[in-house]
Image 1: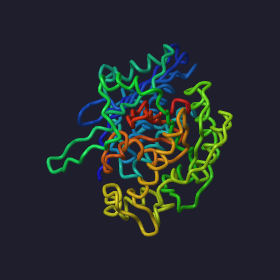
Image 2: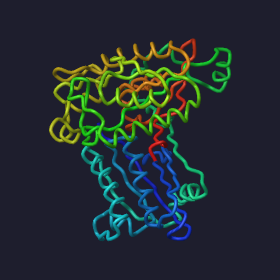
Image 3: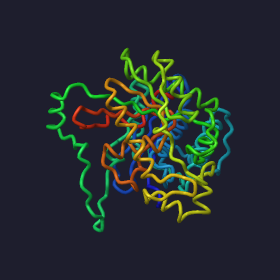
Image 4: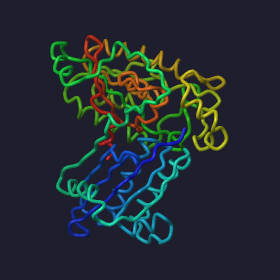
Length: 389
């Protein structure tokens, strides 16, 4: 299945050069023009070029989170960045080389998954949205927003057979949201994807039947940041902490439990999917050598690899774990993995399996789902990574 077509618009500025600096970036769907994500962050004292490169990196990260196999066109009003990232001009300054390498690493991840990144120059007047975000950052107003509705949007096919809606999930119109007031306090479930491991960084599949690596140094930093992010979100509220049985989730959950003064409990139903003979294999390799099998894996929930697990089996156990979590009441924090988190979101939002790949769940990101006593559910936010910046 072809990756999504995305447009990244990025900019940065410095009031003084060097001076108070910030960047802005956004991601649009290339077909509809709808904005899917916005990012803006202050950089303290920095140069204009550092701010522009920082915006580029943030925009590419957002695109990667939306679809790791996306075809991305990057629109910049800086001819310097376009020429340097296209390889036609040399990059002399060390701080710019560092940021350019980060951007190239993200572009390589997209390419390995079957996507692409190209750069194009646009006049400043055509980059006004990113410029406005950069100015917002310099004004002390950061932005980290993802359009959950756009990620979940389904484009109905004339050949598709309409399936009955899941009875435990209600569409939340304005009237429906108002009516939830009579259902009491919802159970708030915060889903945290584990920090990165060496396999995550290499873009390799890593399921419950694989090598089961620990977090690497960056993953441990991300776990601590995620723990602080959870604490900032729930405040002084107490919480139950659950982790999958895999090391990287246990370690991430331990950081969260330590921050909250709680004891983490292991529930193996939150484990990542077992990818069978594809464990420890990169997406780039699968795209190059097994494109038909990979397409079936992404489209058929009953397909499994030898020694592995079908998505339908993963879904059954994850939703069993989700049901236990929601009946616990209060706030429940679950340290888990990409596919289980996507599975919960697909269940709550009614998304078909072949569309769940549009849901962004970056390493150490936070996602929140609220479930009321009658099974009504809403997604509060998805893929929050602001604590990592």
